[in-house]
Image (cartoon, rainbow, N blue to C red):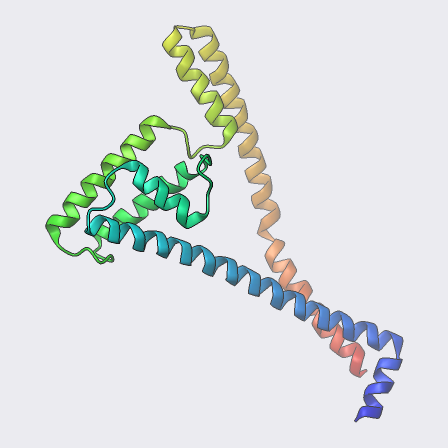
Length: 208
């Protein structure tokens, strides 16, 4: 058996094919491992955030919107001046409200559920009022903020121009999304087929 293995390695073509198969399998396994690890980390982060606000709401230690912001930043490791939390925090609070109403949290009493739901609704409204376009990309957010400012200043012409810019930006993004959807439609199937064929032909070349 060792002698046959040495002969296989000595054959350059077989050695390259064997290496390609091993590399492909290892790469596929590593990619799957990292994808699963990233998914598990995200899930753990969400669960930690939900557990923290659930305890804080039950013992009434979370009193203000700033408390929720600090919890979110702490769980996600954000710095004090990082403003990227806004859209993420609103999304997480809404998700928690769904679990709250479905009684998937530790809070089960109907009276407590109603009080906490009202409190969360108030915080979400407060955040969206202070930053109404937080969940939008920076370009759209800047243009919409300009529109509102120009409307307040009575600059109708400037507001109309900004709206035209927004329409053009939306059209461009829609074209990009459609092209990306078309290219992604076959990307995964072709990648899987390519992986299978690489392994199959590699094995065939080893034993032919």
